[in-house]
Length: 521
Image 1: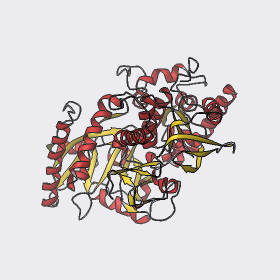
Image 2 (image 1 turned 180 degrees about the vertical axis):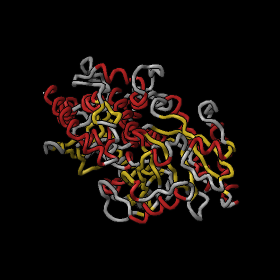
Image 3 (image 1 turned 120 degrees about the vertical axis):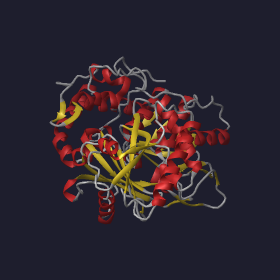
Image 4 (image 1 turned 60 degrees about the vertical axis):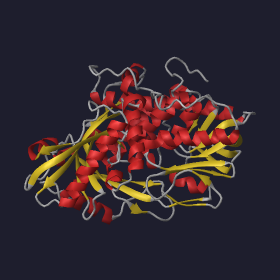
């Protein structure tokens, strides 16, 4: 394992480390135990699982960490209300178990309880009320079976309309009879989880290389290209794991995906009265699909999400249709006192879910269907892991590495990721003098972020009205692998979800990025 200088511990990712490890990988004479392709949550989960078992691992990502689907989620670590409502108890059970692990051992600093508020109006369909309440009860049983304490995730219960309005002040009072309250897990940010897993993998010896494209991929290795310099070299591996998400079919042509697009709207929290609970509204004519208004950091609320077929080429940044935006507004407005319109929308984002449509003949695989089940497939030496959802990333990674070990015959230690804390999971002080926003984003590392800062005015916000400090921007570059302004604005922070915020911040971010580059040169 490479040891970094004192201010740059083994889990620090930066341009200097990236350049050094590219050179070392290009000159390596022994095959890697595992080569991972894809830097989303599944890929970094595989890298951490393999590295923590003592294997030699390199992860390559053609863009940045969390560049694809992993940054476009609802930012939830959830037990699957939708799956319970549709009777898919198996997926909900997996989610409840993995949610428990993330909230208690793996990343308690990045996820916290969130109250879901399902208002019941005079005109709410009776069948919908019955099915939803039954789903909530089933969720309580799954939470209990997962051994998640009720002090962490309280059981569901009926509440008065007044209590619902306290949690979501913008809810419509006319005809509001009561509400059902339930608890779930909410991430401060999905991309931050990806970065934390990647850095923890690096601390265990994994090589994490962004802006490194893999081509000519086989079960024995690949040709790698440094996107930033154009340098090409071959790397050999005893196992190759394809975790490229919606692009997995481009790496393994025997896998056909049928992407589904999920869209969210971004609005000011004030538009809903600064809610502390997540307003949950059934879609018209459905008992298993909901639109959520989710309170978020930076004073925003995300309203989502859709589930639309998205055939055709895979774009770097999917865009919603006008019909999706209209549907989200129409659904959430049924429960609001003041309906939202297009003028309330600060931004939109869409992600593509990599749902498996077809697998080549003769392919050995585990579970797959067009729900949120995942696929682990072995095709001519290559292992593809795809599908699933953010909450169950760890389980998917464990299964993929198990297959790699079985196929390669490489000896390794047992999987330890079920209880392995991520960087920042311990040491967070609730009574710290630091801003709560920093503790929420960094946990036990929050004080370190300021302690290692060299930029001027480290505690100052990067731009007026944005609670991201200049020290956090520098830390993204020196410790979290950010190489470009977009890496910082769009993924290490979520400033870029509102374009006006990104425009106001970009100059200062570029200045800090240039300063960090000069320091490391």
